[in-house]
Length: 241
Length: 241
Image (cartoon, rainbow over all chains, first blue to last red; front, side):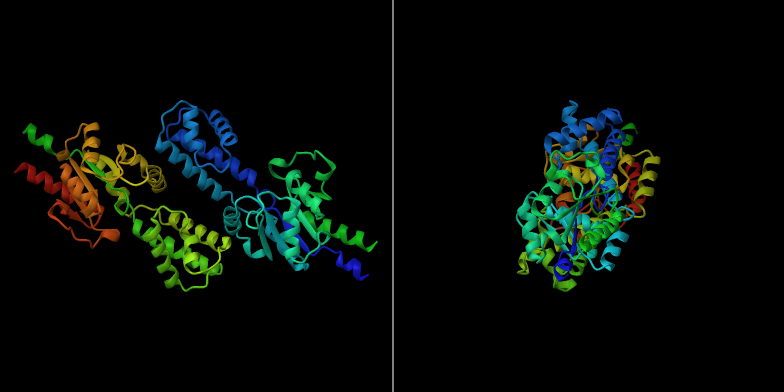
């Protein structure tokens, strides 16, 4: 009996982007509004063309470049124009801030899970400082018992080792940890390999992506965070049998 | 008579920081709020100490570094803490945005001067893209007939040549141009050398700074933008004599 109780979930870990808030919508709107503002400031293209070229530039330069709008002008064969670029930058940042809001059910779900006695954690990759800024702006940083950024503990990607080290530091077994994430690869794949109980949330740009291998198949699937209670009930029932 | 009319002021140029909005207040509040947020996130200092150390770091690293808060932790002998740094970054940027607002009299003064038939320009130094972002966020970018950033035309500082080239491109004589700025050096000094009619506005952190030489003495002094009408009247009267 004691052994089974130990196997119960103790910690619930969340990936950040598209899991705790709608990152896909945020970026889509920020980019679209940037193009709108640049057109208003004199960029001689229509919205669709502008958006398409921006996506092109982002694909080529990576998400973290600060030169996207400069490069857009270049691609369009236009001279550099600081007024147009600044208009894009301002609209982009304002829109990003406006849409940096938790899903409607994020905070209530986190609070309910805490009340039920679960420890809550963030397990996220990407630039540590940027991920922390998001948590703070979302206003949810105090709700977690532990925030772990893989970059900060020395892992650029969520490799199995990154999960194992994180859990070991918390003195948690992989089987006691639920991990909620949106991407079959690398999130679910590597958490599965590390032995965590994986929950895939079907939101954001990876919503319709299907697993390429069995190792990318999550233990559970949900379409929003509030369905986690159901997942936890299923796990409790399974353990009792 | 015609010759006198030609000598009348045609263009009024404005420096940006502390001239069109209260940059000193903006930075003071942004820094103070950043320290407050860092203390709330766990920085073990009081507000005064934190602020003093930040100012120290800025003096050492320059205003444009993005490592001010990292360096603060280092100076305090503390380990890097991304949560504390992110808290500072978020509060800093939010406060900077909140205080990026024109003086109460900025827009009405600019509109009144336009209505009187003057052309309005910005003549500013600093990073072009940042200065344009400010103009756009201030919502005053459409009020100017011309925005000239010295950096963009090849001058890092407001040397006399920078003024002369700008005026030549606009086909304006220095004596037809009023220049409103806050710093005796380099703003007023170099505009005087280029032959513009200088107006010093006593606002912001250089408010109490006295000229070191005769060349830094402006032709006129005002304490707020709405006093420009009076300056223009004086000039008109002087020309008629």
